[in-house]
Length: 483
Image (cartoon, rainbow, N blue to C red):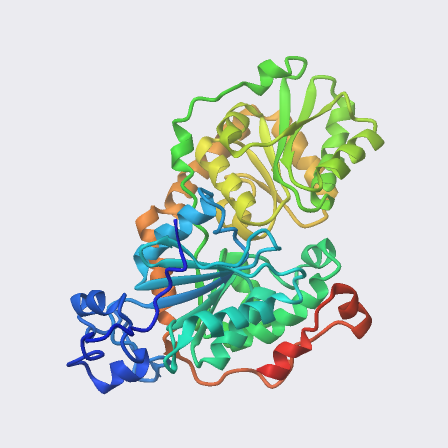
């Protein structure tokens, strides 16, 4: 992977006249010559406009006369880790855009350097010590690396959440007069989300500042679209529903590396909880729901296949409940996902996030009966009573009844699994369709909406008390003050 390969100004003596023969509009947008991209832009015919149908009531927020958009993405995915899934995914996204620049929140794991991931994809790690400092660090990178010759390199600024990433993207978009695209994967007003982290109530307030100011919003599920519009009615005509795409189909033909029923032959019915656990509350809630059946039936067991910082607390919870003989704790590797899903009797899903969405998608395609909490990808893939069983957040009574139903009705397990597979194949689509829809959502950000920020939207970013901020080592007020 190349380093420091971000485009720079052409200072070569005798170089061609900058953008010779191009319109004044192109030169005002792109600035003086950029030697590493002039030839490629000429080949693409820079006069060809971005392929977006423009209603008469709207105007281009950012004039673009190239065939593809240049995107700046603000994310916390570790795209700098060589060979990681995140890096491969972002490299694939590069095919959708003229250029893709990625500012990624890292925590001091890298010495700062610009990393060229592919021919037109660059990554910039922030090495931020605390999440409160991230907006400042990211803005400085955007200004120093992407603003030169009097212009800003990207046409659209996007973020992968409406919280500190969204705030950062909004600040950059505002400073450089670009459209803002925000992806939302969790409902900021969900009580469970608010309880998961001490800073989430502040993140909720930040989302109420960011979302009304987004040019375009992408929600990962139908339930999330409804929740966001209920809270922000101004988003109704500028929100897209597009789940993350996971290539779970490659798992369908995978031969299981092991069989849970053979590994734990003392059990004839095995429940499964699996994933990466940052917090323990949801997994412990699922264990509590399963404990009724575990205590009542000697041949019923639970496998918790997990990774992440909460695993020690989850193991302690199992011991505290006296379930060590009935709950088997294993280290989770995503390579083993087919074996877990194909050989378990049912999956209990209470987590959120991209990896859990991947697991739910795989479970549907692999025919694993699923019990999940309502919301997010679960509500998109499953319908209670037909393709799975669904419960409301914190409804442990519903969870106990659902587990009992799956245990006592093998024909329903088969029925639900078959219906879930059919619905998943229709919902998840194929990778090319997903990429096209994602590209269209980004391109739609170029279309400006009238100023629809509601009067009751916060005019400044809500911040913690000075004592809390000092404790975290960052001052979020600087973002608003500089903006």
